[in-house]
Image 1 (cartoon, rainbow, N blue to C red):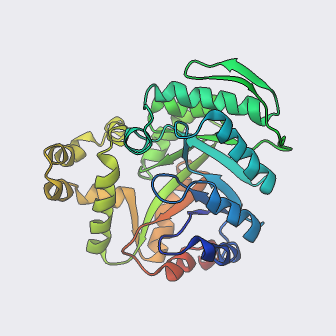
Image 2 (tube, rainbow, N blue to C red):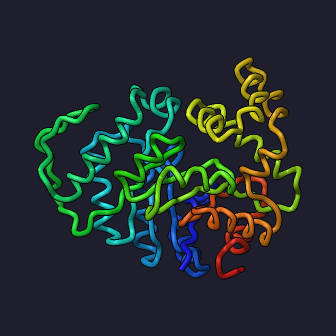
Length: 318
């Protein structure tokens, strides 16, 4: 059965109201809920609510940064979720970005590939119940052992953009988490991960048949993300550099209005799913056809109200 997820928590809905939403998501046929972690809710608390409110749902972090928690704390939080939702939780980790790590969390964003690799290796040991006493290349852990062993260690996914991290996900993790790419880009990305791995994709959606409104919302989101160095490098690698050079040049010059105007419609239409419910479902389906195993909708503002969007895009509404 095709899995079909959605990003939580929902904007404009208090966490105390989310249990009822989780129950409704399960009724509508959503299989998964996934969280991010930037400057809103942390990645674990909304999933803990979901674990209790809707025991049918699979849960995942997409993603928590490897720099903003110590390795031991990250292992403890993953183990806690695995105990609370046995067999239903997946831990997605990633390097995040220099903005989140350095500017917001006072850590050094150095050697992200190695830090992610070392964190995955540590987590494999720690979540197996072993006592970890090891020197990794980017950190050391001495004498750590989980006080509450995990009966079933959760799968670990790596958030990846370019070839090196994608290959790391294929080699040492259980899957890859991808985002801010088109359905056509998926084939290029999946080829680097290799066969037999889960591919979780966060897919940005604005449910509206008002094309100009959707493109305005899409441009705002694209400018916020794709001017961050790691995403700019990703899209250059994908071959989208010439289309985005105008935005990058204007953004570096401090002209935000010109940067937004420089984003071509074809880029917005490729990276942001919009249109009627049927059109949005068809577009999401193209991601699956090209290799995504778990599509995860990320709802952008500007479309229909939340209840209508969640119901219209649900699997059982198809």
